[in-house]
Length: 213
Image (cartoon, rainbow, N blue to C red; front, side, top):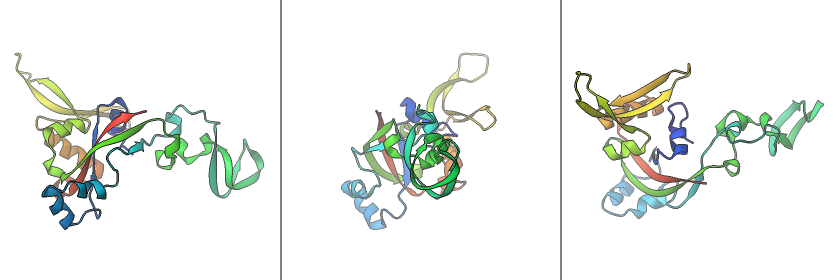
């Protein structure tokens, strides 16, 4: 699942985002991390949630996948519910063939089935590092683009900036940008995971991946 608000999911679908980070959490102990840093890369490969070569579905809303709203999908309904198109008088419960438009996944990608997702990624590499150890190169793999910016001094002078463009809830284009790629990424990660995430500098699994169909 990739964040849609900041345009990360669309970057994955366009193939411009090819890396993502997930906190190590309790998956690796200090001893595991120490072993990894000493060259035992297999420790991270074995303990990571996703494995090299694994193919993982990209969660999208059913309505964004090109499905017809009346396509039937076997679905478990936990409590008696009226579905007008199926039976306008009899509440239905249990496993039923439900039109996708009534499924929670029609508007919320948290409830979709992986088997119905048309696009997938394949994990190509895994590494473990502190959040602040991200390289400038990896910032661009995380969805930022490298943009030449005119200095605005009335001449041809320019500089590079890391830029991420997204659309806010009111339909306005906004940007996260900085001449320092790490600074730009720190702003994004604090927006995604909460203020102070960058400063905590936790250990992360950094997954590289490619888009597959």
